[in-house]
Length: 116
Image (cartoon, rainbow, N blue to C red):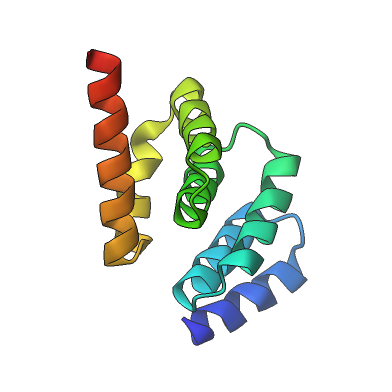
């Protein structure tokens, strides 16, 4: 993760508007346990493109990790409204095991609540 972070930072320096590099940088920060910094980067990316599903999904996880269930739900609902839920499976590979389980459990619980 530290090497990926350094590479992503260099890519951001080369092209400050490149959203993919910012997301890669945020993913590396998350993997290194620097969730607050990842959150700031993702929030900045979201301010530039408020309907970007991969950014919304990553922010949802970070909110759920903090215990902010309502905010996490709102972000997941925005992902669904974009119609681009295909980003969720690849993102799950990035999440740490305990976070993947948190997201799966949360989504399952919300789906059951909707079905009831």
